[in-house]
Length: 246
Length: 321
Image (cartoon, rainbow over all chains, first blue to last red; front, side):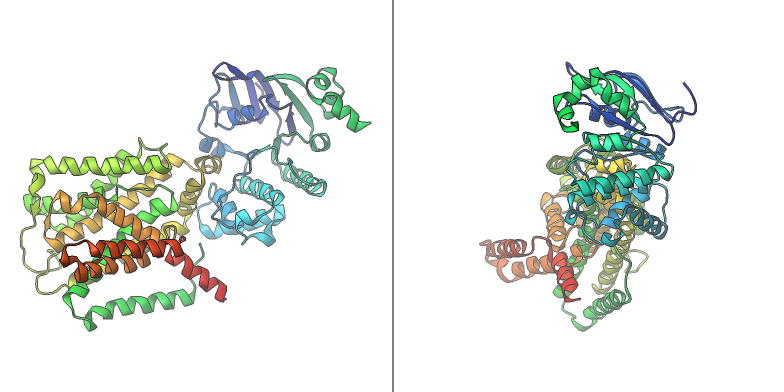
């Protein structure tokens, strides 16, 4: 195992009773990359995410972050080590303002309230939510909520940001804004792994794409390689994506 | 949570000054007694709001800590002649440790299930004390008469010292709750209340922070229990460990506004005088009219102020700006 890897997932398997959600999945993430994990519904993308972030116990396999084993650590420990994540269904703290939500993440690395507030206002300026910092989190639109969730994750000052379907349900304009934001995040030195359904975003963003099907990794490569791969087309993209492209 | 503004400081200072002067102006012993009970339940309500309102752990077992506080100081005084002030601290520490011991295995319980476990815990504590010979079992403990002095935590000629001590305790509870709610811990409590998953993702050790909330709450509630023992001078399980006290604490907090610092104090200021005066006016008839009136009033307030009285006040103040 190379020490320069940021994330190293080795042969992870996860079963729910008799259902195999992940079977012997391995992949690596280098510092500074944007890696996408794609696959049809039920392919095990979110399960894999939850295994890496400690929300599911893995049944087999090991996971390393910066050379340090994090297999089956508690989620809050993984957060402290430097991995932040968002959820497929947006999770914010409902009786807090936008700024307070972000500050809750900010307390991970700082303790003084004034420091945390200042840092988190910087984060909100970065993600474009600063104007709405006093809004109640529930009063935000879906796209702003997703932005808020990213802000909360960034406030933890992570080295690896894992986004679970942050582009789902966005309008084309909002989608472009989110893509731009993720690029900006990467240019700040944060490595990004996304689980995504929106192919437009995957094609535009990713350095590398990992394709899962029925719990197994079937292909890995550049976005262009992946969409040209017959196995991927058969397993996931199907006729519809071809139709869209023509 | 915002920092205190100058205006709020002035308002708070004025209210405090009024509370200090009040018993000097109104010398009725019954009035002073009602105020003392109000402060006591306000303190318990504030302590409850830390775990129930902020951290979302809906406890109906607070009376266990109230009772342990009452028993710890009384037992130490009776048996070893230890000052009630030291008993106060000892009771707080024992309560906090008990809270941790019961809170840890309940780490994954939420909502109704936590509430049920808390009731069970308090009932177990009551039954144990009812049968525990060493602490007087069902006969309870009578606190020995000592010379009137602050050091002895005992006063015979006037209720005023009790009034001011309880007011000071309440201020301490409010200060602790305010400090906690505006610090990292307060943010973490509110994240835990929203969902354990959200909190964990943000790097919050949910088990540990839930224990912090329970332990701080238990310590403060225990202080109120010690005070009660020194004030009434007789305790038994049926007076300091029964479920209605837990319910009263929850009511005070919910009615006033559970996830606010001052809400429970407002709730106590409405509920306790209501309860005491309806009992004084109507209770002697033995028909339960006082409880009917009391219950009806609670229902009316809850229907029109679901966010708590304090919630409505802050809402009005915000609209007025």
